[in-house]
Image (spheres, one colour):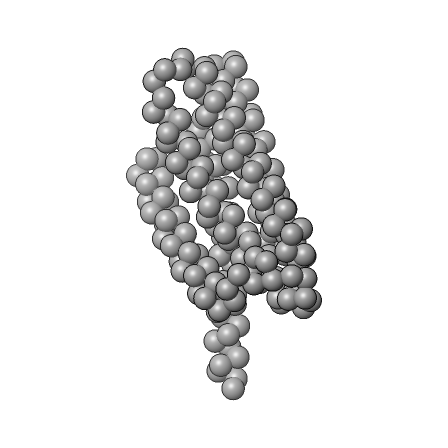
Length: 185
């Protein structure tokens, strides 16, 4: 199981790298307009989709990286007891997920663009992640019940892969549509 998770980890890092490259390319084209361009640049559906997807890619990459670092640093704490460490671990993951959802929401409000399908799916997935972490918090942190651990691992890996898939769909479809238009011209 650990070998599979290790392989999935490398796959996730590769997708994250490709998303980061896409973000840099988009940022080079549009500059700060992607974040603070005003409502006039989000009038069309395509522009709104682009801005919303860029916000989601940025938030997912930032908060997933933060969450990974937070989780690994929590596991290194030696001063806390087993139950306090578990409670702190799952609570901090929930706070990280809530901050991601809040950031996506507020950046959309500040930006004045509509929520894309990508943004909606990321927010729904965040609710699922918080629910999964809360179940683990109660089961492991308060009742010392480890029976859900294998289910938790599969669900969290699945949610992480789904989140990356959701944010990767927009760059891939954009590139495919661009190639299709170039062939037609």
